[in-house]
Length: 231
Image (tube, rainbow, N blue to C red; front, side):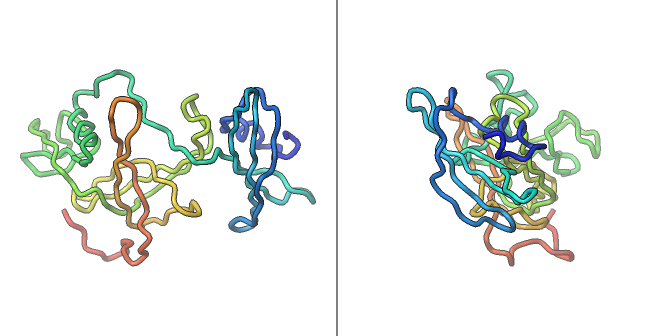
């Protein structure tokens, strides 16, 4: 299998996959032309005790042959948040507790009305201490984004690649809130200014929920230069 991987990526690829151990058998179950110059295949990996995993491989032309450039487990799974203690950090608690109810709340200064993210004890604008969390529509526009392909800790194995989108909230003074972007058909790259909606998905075993961004399909709802911005 190593001979099928790009020489400069084999460690990254193997480290990102959740494979059965020991791996007893691997069988190609599907192949098709992918986006651009890619060819995609599906691999059924069988381990001891009939432990089975499905893997999607993306192949690219390399020195007169084909090599695997990207791989991920199927179905795609996103990382889940990890809190170091059972309780939320006090300054952020109201934000996370509201999220568990399916609501986005963003901090705001009572004195100068400045929207604040991330949560803090002191207003960065007027230095006031009276800060509250107000409900905000979970929708906005992509300000920037980044794709992570390397699992930096054990909990990410089998859950890469994933995209984190920094989203501008027009109903909260254009403050920017980052969250994972839910997989979209074809896993197309998001466009800067593209409209997104927030969804709240369950995770873990404590009935908690987390915000994720989801791209809208309607291109005419993307933000363009000159659009009015709500504050």
